[in-house]
Image (cartoon, rainbow, N blue to C red):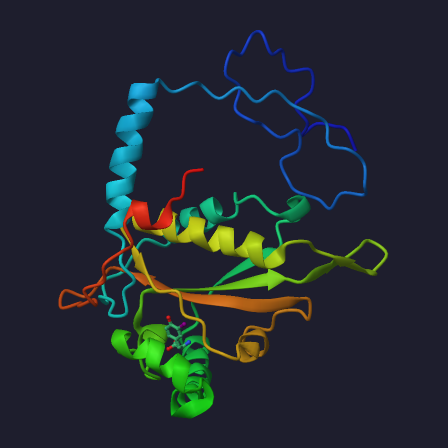
Length: 252
Ligand code: IYR
């Protein structure tokens, strides 16, 4: 319905660097019609500024650490909401945006998540993971006790939408769901870190209980649980060393 909330006839010459403003404010499922194309001319950053920003960003990102001990100090919820909004700008297969972020605020629901996660983790650490997996985890010293699920100021559960229901109620496939949601979680972690917050990517396995506890529909599958907050003052992290650029970059 072309109408009031559409920005039509925008003159490209009057705006040298228009933001990629979509023509509609709210996303609605497509019905197979092609997207209208709009100009995309972000302001070109001078190379010297790119170099400076990239070097600074590289350094800041290298200071991110996964945190398992969180301070009780409150974190403005809007920071988390903005970080989720950043994550939701991720590219996705066929632009299907196959993600749902659940911000779990109800303490009772958080207690149930923790109890169920710790029960699953208990079985995992008791042997379900297998000796090779347990050996890989041993240097990190993780265990089945997950206090951050109830104690971190915020808890985000990310779901992937394996498919969606079309207007006729029929199942429609989503494409590259793992990749799309993985990219979105990466962007979420970056946004949280660059906003001054710490997080943990927790993947209790199996995660089916999350769908039940949070009442998510059958097309959604839990992908990761992220406790978020400031690190505790006595927070400690393993003295990890990252691969150098030479070890991860191949130039052909
Ligand atoms: N999901 C479990 C086990 C675990 C697995 C991997 I791979 C990790 O890098 C860390 C933990 C847990 O959260 O403890």
